[in-house]
Length: 375
Image (tube, rainbow, N blue to C red):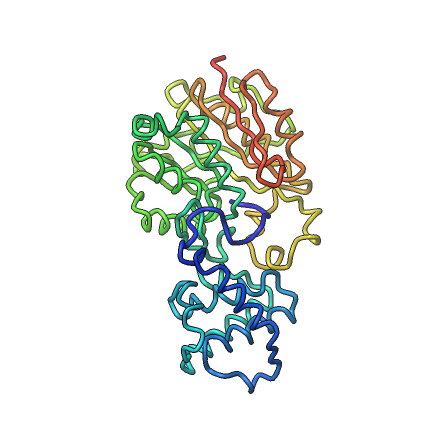
């Protein structure tokens, strides 16, 4: 479940052709913006005019990154890349294409995120299907992948050997599956379990795993956090798994000790994972009114809000991770803007060592990571 962050574009996987045409693209956008058309009937039928009209409509509604949204929607309708769009400004659009295009532009002007209109978002250089059932993957969440690989010791020098290790990984709150699929893609020897409380989100995640040919190594489980694995092994065949799950763990604000009676695992079931990664819900419900309308009105609430303050989910997640990680196993968590101190206090418990916080490109604390101690 990725949280509130910037929208597209992202750092990885950019189309090289789009970079080569950057200056030409800039000149054409400037030309379009200086040639305003406000009368719906005055639209002509070529690419240049369609883009000009779409940008004007989006800007009138104060849509952020209006030119980019107009481009992406036209690329989607025509099934062409950006380089083609700007290399063929006089290409005629037929009536059905124009109608579909401006229907999407109108919906975008009404606040629907571009990614939900196109059904796609790029993450870690991979194309992911997104629907209103899942949060849109954000660029900042790529730091979760980066930190996980770094703490696993995946470097250029060790890549070939370490990537084939038979690691067991959990992605908690998988949403679109972007973290689980990206890790499975990077680590061909790994087996990944991806959990989510939303059956609809898991269906999207399954399709993304199939899209990137990792379905045979990613198992999907519908549950809250990691609760399903307190009565079962995540690698037990589905037909052998108990149907009942334990009650949710209370958020006391502190990570409970792994040997506490309320959450004790049988010895054969404990210490299952080498790595647990999560981008949990971390926006406070008290912040909802300040969210952009694209987020507030269209992205799934259960993937956004982590409680009234936004930090409530960290305590049960960290407590469960302490019980399920192997000694020296790795926990990697994305942080909200106000959750660093809260998460750091929880990770100061005796169960954890090697705690680190990684900042994103804007200098914001973005990822907390720690090792499960051998105690």
